[in-house]
Length: 153
Figure 1 (cartoon, rainbow, N blue to C red):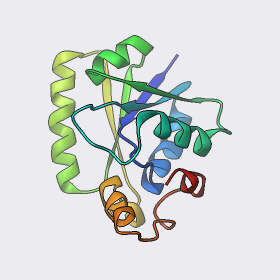
Figure 2: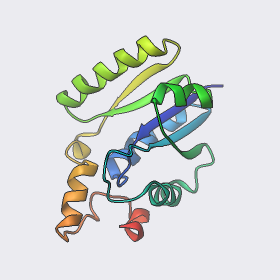
Figure 3: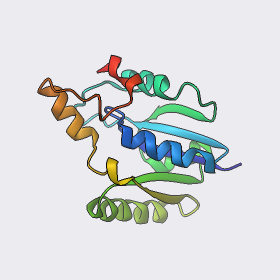
Figure 4: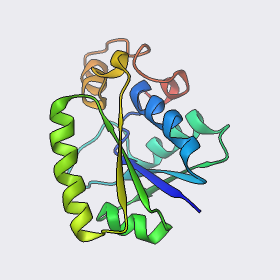
């Protein structure tokens, strides 16, 4: 069985995340969206709110499982039996950053393969950080996030 994890903070989930997930999920038998809980970061939404938001967005796909975790992502992959880790790439700087992480992860867990999915051009400028900034300044983020997430924002 091919099991994948798409890890991230999803604070909040964006249309760019949704695009990567929809393009990846069909490649696997089971697909986890893993919400990493980084207690040193002060986010917009708490982990429970992010879980609820993601469930609302993906409630109609039985292959997708939403979970939260703490600690090393490769250790979480092992705990759920995931042999693949999906990462979205928007820019060259994303690639450099993700490549370094993938190489470290490979050293820690050579059995887990990192797979990079390049974002569609229209989504390359969308990030959770930018969406949070717009929200903090009372701006309209509806063009950047899935409509199911708006009640959580």
